[in-house]
Length: 223
Image 1 (cartoon, rainbow, N blue to C red):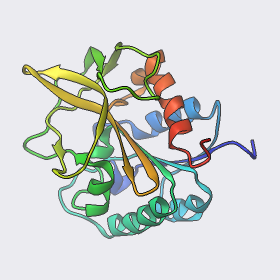
Image 2 (image 1 turned 90 degrees about the vertical axis):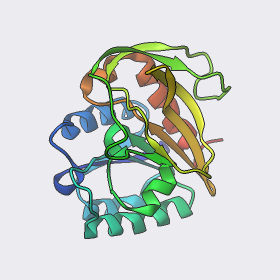
Image 3 (image 1 turned 30 degrees about the horizontal axis):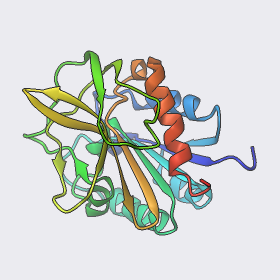
Image 4 (image 1 turned 120 degrees about the vertical axis):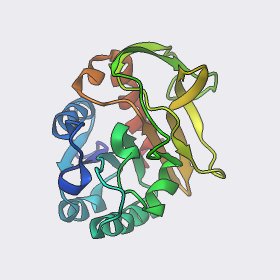
């Protein structure tokens, strides 16, 4: 697999996790999906991330936070992220990563939208219909809306001057909310996927296909 895309999955632990998301399980499921076509390394500390990120083509962040204030690790992650995106690496951010690294400008800027305490919420987890947006995109070509058992993040807080390309949405309280979107940061591509609360999310074949396509699209090795 020496010529395959190298994906490093940062699986949150400790200050980069929360009591509600089984990150170890979802990181293993994500690694299993992506490992069918790529070389995948799962790390759980910033020291390990720092040692691996230099060879990574795609960084997948599956983390969270149960805090409102930053910690020193956040700043260290911001430096690694800036360097990674500065050389054109691709970023895949999963579900509760919209909650991760609170107060870190580099993270909010990279994603383009994050969870805002007191404003953002999600309806009860359950089987739900995810709708494809009308925006043409190679990641969704040939795919359609699909059913999945998951959470639907709602009323996320978006950067006002950041251009996002929504791929999938859901409807709540009569309004349409972005769930999966892409953007670019310099020469880097970014995809945020609000799905993935637990392993049932990876039982939806359409979600699995989207993630496989995402790595191909995100990788700087793309043709």
